[in-house]
Amino acid sequence: MSEQVFWDDINEGDSLPIISPDCSTQQLVVWAGASGDFYQIHYDIPFAKNTGLDNIIVHGALKQAFLGRLLHDWAAPDGRIEKFGCSYRGMDYPAENMSVSGTVTSKYTEGDRHLVDVEVWTENPDGRKTTPGTARVALPVRS
Amino acid sequence: MAESIITDELKSLIGVDGPESEAEVTTTGCRLFARAAGHTDLIFYDEEVAKARGYKSIVAPPGFLGTTVYKPADAERASAPPGGLNIPYKRILNGGTTYEYYDSIVAGDVITSSSHITEFQEREGSVGPMLITWRETTFRRKSDGKVVAKGSSNMINY
Image (cartoon, rainbow over all chains, first blue to last red; front, side, top):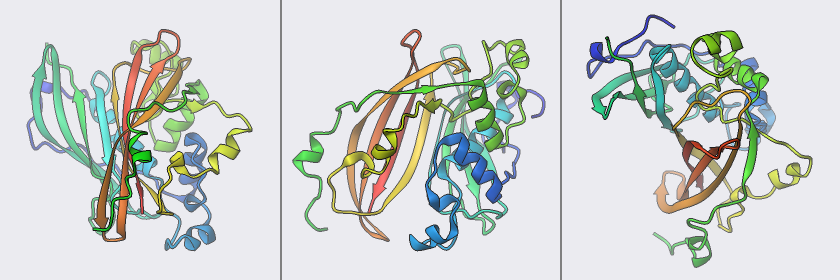
């Protein structure tokens, strides 16, 4: 986390600070326990290969949670994620260097809420956006 | 494209709410979810910090809507075909999820949810024909019935 960002200071096209989440096999096991997703393609290599995959894969919902972390850390302490979501467009494998980032696409008000729309994504080492998504975030204004 | 697999039987499922399920938002559940996603903000871990920031208790991290209350009979249900849909494709992928929040979710909340199918779409993809099933889930806080979040998700059968 860093200092509070204010709606007033945001411009369309601004980038969110990149995060590089831990996608080790150990982290996937922590996620399995936390989410209750015990599908074996996420921790059992022979099982994953039997279903036609090259390796075990990172849980889609974990990638979504990384996007949530990106947005939370950017907007905290006083901003609020109103909406966020993504599509799972490609597989990610453990121990690869994933980066997670976003760009502000619009800035507007609705009633007394000061809002920004953000495009977010996870990116694999080949530069492919495997989990593109969008979010709406409410930010505080300078008083 | 071949004949549509969206039968009248499937169409009749659109808009019909499935069974309600219950999930507990516990301090331990919030901490574990936050740890798994790599969160460092202490509002997800420390009750005093969360209260000092204006929350009633430890905050549920983005995407955490509680831990489903597990009973042994659920294991059988989990091995049933996903969604119980009668469709000719064997493989299934999670296509994506969007959450919209209407209130904060904190430790101590019990969240009830039910979902219904909103739409079926057929597409010819690189992997052959596929069926995309869109669902909307409504999450309510049990104590006061308030809708705290809605989820929109899609599953891909192919």
